[in-house]
Length: 312
Image 1 (cartoon, rainbow, N blue to C red):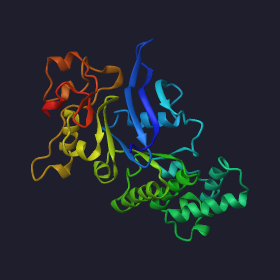
Image 2: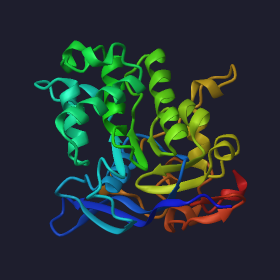
Image 3: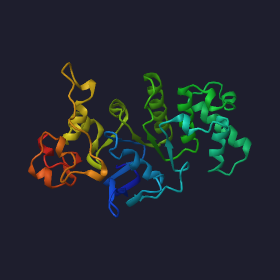
Image 4: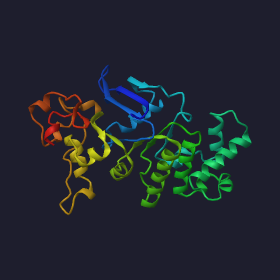
């Protein structure tokens, strides 16, 4: 039995005004995917690939100057905190420095539920307890600067999950954390998914986290999905040259050999090359690649946007 589809994205495009008047630069170019109940769906790729923009489109949190086309079904932009919630990258800036942490969680509860202050406070304390904040009732009265970095990250997980949303969007939640706090945050997110049936959209550079936790993965390059499929298969048998190059550049995949690097750098949205955007960096590129942008097509158990996906 197929799991329930909680969110369906089709031909998502996000553009900004380009340097040339009247010309728009597309930062996200025709991305499509589904998010299923209880799954971890990972968005990966280099900086500037369009991962965070894609994730924020799900939340209706794009910059004002962005133009979005395509469909996100259902539209949950008016249901933030209730059906969909964000676990941000920077816990310190996500929390108000002038209000106690418990007050901020209680306010989040009351923004969604019709409850009194005392009940909202109790829900907030319970949320802090669930994410492992010791002496939660007392800590709820403390300000963010009185929390350690790891505790602040736990607090933003509590904030995102306090109203039990169906979908959590975690935007680089382990960036700048040490290994202990990284594992803690990933475990907290895994526990939310397992105990509450929450789906997790994980935006990350952390391929080890993807390997350990993700069910499916979408690899992005220059605003496009270049490979989408089961995480285990994509990470062990990539079919897009970009995916293969990205994985080969990871230290854990060097196996005692000199570390492989991807030559060059990703193009800016307003200076995309003709044809496939990865062609200038791709070892398999042919004349076709430099002139024709490949459409996603099925290769084995995944979708691959590459003219030579069978040869990787």
